Image 1 (tube, rainbow, N blue to C red):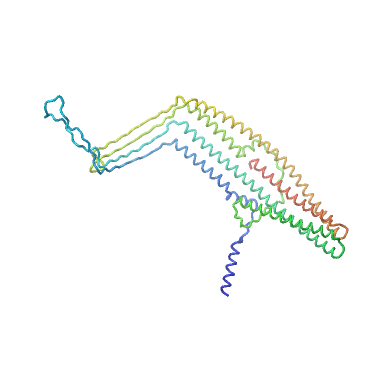
Image 2 (cartoon, helix red, strand yellow):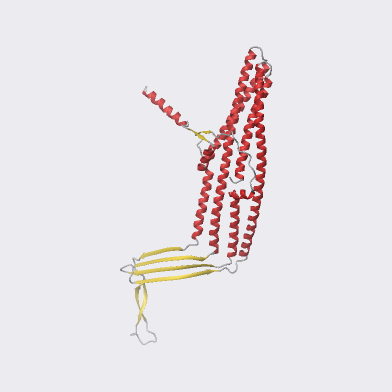
Length: 444
């Protein structure tokens, strides 16, 4: 008995471990917070900003002094001897030259130690200065790109949230349509058995019901696929149960087109392009500075100690040196002239790209506004169509129950109602998606 109880307990633990323990409710705001915290692309974008900040430190280091220290010690265990002339033999036979007297002399010390410290500084370096200025501008560009990436991903998250709600709403409509078709089929079946309805009416009702079952299954599949994508975007585990609780009863009003200047100041992608033009200006100045000399200076201190019985004492030296290097290219084969011209062309290209972006942003605003006007009208029409279709379906079912209507009328009315309800959900999603695109286009 005890063994059976333990087995049942283990089975319950295994089953319970495979099921989600909690269901999480997400409104749109909480879902966007989750996306901003755990989205992989946003994390990569933040890392690119951090990398750009490190580039500033790296390029700035080229303008700061470099200090280096070096030291060395050598212990010689054997002596290196070399014959060396120490005098002349004057007792030899008379000769114009006296022969030298040689002795073996040590040419090394038992202990050899050297210590050196150096400081180097680029006094004038136009190229390093330009790289530092470009790195600072590039950091600002990456910050703006990160902001636009964030807004783009959050816009995609809003649209995906709305699309998932649409998919579940469509699935609900299909389920209600299937339930209605099943009720109609059951009613026709009773009448057929009572001899009031024909077999044709029964088979037509059965076909409608089976079609509704297939449509419901497909709608549920689409809803689950949309939910999987929604979880992936926010870094939510697939096994976690999620409920979308955002209310869509009230949709935002149709916005007015703002002034282009206000939009441009709010668009981080446009500001990144403006900063790119600044980089082109810096590159042009750097190309002109290639005609200037580069000047660097060094200060070196060195100490050496040599001794047999100690680290130093037998022979010591100290050295202090100050050096200045000036480099000025005289002839580069036309490279500098080409560099200046390339930088000027890049300046022109950057200005043209900025003007193109202004035109595109203005066109996008007008296009989105027109689409939103159309979507709002379709939304109003879809509401009216649902009301009319609902009334027609109700009348058709009442007429069929009283024997004044036909199964064909009920099938058409039920199908029209389902299509109208799906059309309303699509109209709601279309307007919401366009509104989210509008927020991105205006920089909000």
